[in-house]
Structures are given as structure tokens and as C-alpha cells.
Image (tube, rainbow, N blue to C red):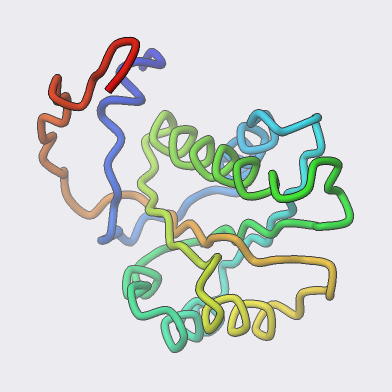
Length: 169
């Protein structure tokens, strides 16, 4: 699959099959995550790979839109380390780019995924920090549910010329 096809055909997957996701695939996904652009090359991200079903189930207790973790085979928590900040506040963009790389790498490998926002919701941040025993200098940013799709997802048309402006609005 080329890059353009990967970008256009990636979908959020919320229902996963029973097929396991291998460690080598997770490592490849995380390698791609670490190649995301980062302000000043600060790379403030850390990752927690979660396979434990009980831990994933506990996330659904403080995240109201995380039901897909019940069928996901693995989840990756993306955590920002504020001590790595060279440019204050840019960790949000850095971690966003990192999550996008996770989603695209998973899709390129034939694996489904969906981005579960944690930051900036206080109750989700507190819940994930406590559940994963995060250090003080970290901010939980997102959880990505991962697994093989249970079914094919329709490809909607999303290109909209009315959203494009040249030079000025």
C-alpha cells in the first residue's frame, strides 16, 4: 500500500476480531510512532503497551467512549513527558503527530485502530494516570485501541472543495 492509499483508506475501527496482534507488529507501529515530527526534536512521548483485559476494561470506567477496548487485542497509551519539553506546550502537537503515525502504521500493516482522546479531559487524565501509575512529570495524552477489524468498514467520500480557500478566506 502506498502512502496516499494508506491516508485515504484508513478508518477508525471499533470492533475487532479474535486474531491476535503480534509483538513484532506492535514494535513496528511504535517505531513508526517515534518517527513523527516533533518541535525542536523534543520527542516527549512515552508508550505503555497494554494487553491485560482487566486494565483495558478499567479504562472504560472513566472514558465514556472506550467500549471498543473490550474487543481490542492491545492498546497503546501515549504519554507526554514534560521534562522533555524544549518548546513549552508543543508536546500536544508532537503527541498528535505520533498518534497519527500509530494509526497509519497499523493500517499499513492491515491492523485496525481507533484514537481515544484522554487529554484535555481531567477525569480521563486522572483515571489513566492512576491506573498506569504515571510519574508526576507526565501527562496522559491518548489511548489507541488496536486489533484486526471484525468487518470491512465502508469508505466514505471526504474530499470537500468548499473547505479549500486560496490566499484569503
